[in-house]
Image 1 (spheres, helix red, strand yellow):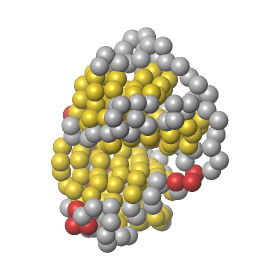
Image 2 (tube, rainbow, N blue to C red):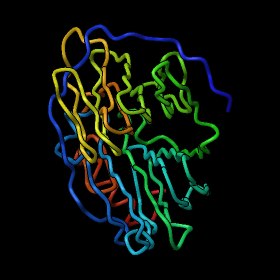
Image 3 (cartoon, one colour):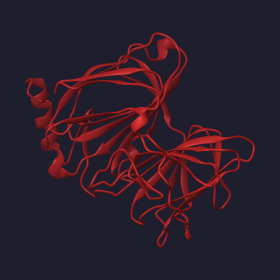
Length: 293
């Protein structure tokens, strides 16, 4: 994809960092080691986002077993692969190979059973999986799936030399690979040279966070965010976006995620996310009866 021309969008009243989150080491699937950065206790604060997992290892034993068949209902999964190869198959008949720099966007809707299995036996596997909630009227919609190869993700460079990959939403007038009407997610992968500054306009009411995965970032007020930390950005009245800067001693990389909160009840039982306890009970019954998907 040719590089689009960005439009400068200066930020005059940037958000402050509300707090830093370290994440929790855990495992999922058939024993894949990962860090759960956005945990269940942060779901209401970071509505409409339900979970963010970061994974990265050079050791095949940490990822080789992958994620065999498992169900989902009521939300979307967004998997962004920095390095590695992962095969997706699901009960709706979709199949795709996620490779370096690519994204898989799956809407579970009323239900899907899928697997995500590595197609490599050595080398590094690194990336993120984000869970994005669905509004109540879409939770029982038909499942949907899209493979987005790295070449289809719009990318541009700012005057400061920051490379911006626009996975979802819009940045500096450049529309991303995906758009969502109700949650309006913004998902950017930022590659910053040492000392480079980046500004991003954001609606005042949207929840937002930044996860640093290389180097370190500095925010207004002197807050430094090191690698493997998530910065939750304050919903400051009158704010119009965020301003961040890479540390002066090394290049940095981070993902920026923001979205419009749904402000609906959240009822979760493992891979099912609905609005009421009764809907959760029905989801479990449907899965046990083999009629989830």
